[in-house]
Image (cartoon, rainbow, N blue to C red; front, side, top):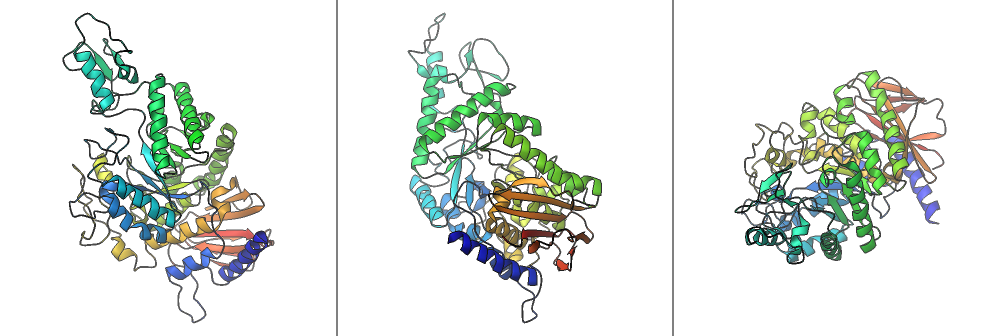
Length: 543
């Protein structure tokens, strides 16, 4: 009965959306507003409760300040959960929330606590409870590659070495924490001196971030207990920082570590969701998937030099546009061959790179197109906070993590900039306060794109192939299949309108559209008329 109900809902939604699509007027002749469009899209269906989700990356420091101290906090994040739910978000990735001497908190001093600037453990428990009410999964940054130099493990090891008698050899049985790190009398790569001794420790990133020794079984037990603690608090999984630096320059060893992390996490929680940061090219990402890790951020498609940005910058060039769908197919096949259970993790930008607004030259139509290309990829897509507003941000790391632009006055929860952050000279697309009132804003476009992703599980779950017969000119065409469902997504990656001949697709129906410029996307007989940067989704008529 559930299957029949879903088919009937799809047929009804397709009929309604084909008749008026997302830009056409309603029966009174008035243009549909964003909420009406989103409501129509939602009639297509809904996503299952699994690990294929639309995630939103939050830097708590810069998101929402609840107590007026200028620093974002967990209660402030809780106050914005309705905003995220309305946007269509079904998962949160929190950058590090543990006590730390740095503003970014990637040098963790206590894995079992919340940084006081962000709130209390009770605040975190409230966040988890409120997210559960909204079917939003929470994953937290798990920084395993290194600890803080102020972490008790490291401090005790350093103290032991500083008090070691001259000429004596260190004994792990006397101080087990010596084995948690790399200590040596020789200054190798990333070596940092242990003050007052002849010893060095390895800290590849920074002197405040001593690298750990994954050969230590005692350390593995510590990490197992940390994962168990946070899973017990209700987190759905973890984002694994700097996974290619566990053993810098040694992919084989890194893959071994990722495999063990995956096994450790799923032994605690079988459906624990792990997504690893492996800042590498397509071939290396494919290799890392042999670890069995659930997800790896798809740097081959994200960032300034990724496939999406390259195609967007070449919008209107048929030769480049045609490669997008084939690249999706190639990546899916390669990752699937390495890990049959992989879940892709596409993204456009994050806290380490410039924002997509800059990559797209601040062109709102290109920003929308890039956003949809990311959101409509298979897997668990990730959206960086403020991306849905087209917020700019580049330069040093703090400048990529600027305050969320809630309103023009920059009050009512807007945080102070993090240290050394240079705010953009202007925000050409405006704050949320401005954009939520404009049906053609980047924000309202994101709402529609995410609603479409959430309504059709075949989009997030589907295996992707190039639809060669329609992948013509500047119209990129991909087919997705999942179980007995299928869809075809056509994207006019072009500042000019285009058409697609659907005469060979009589058994398909126009189910939904996304218009970047507000012009209608229509089906005239067998001719699909796509506006500039327009997107159309086809479903089998019998589906």
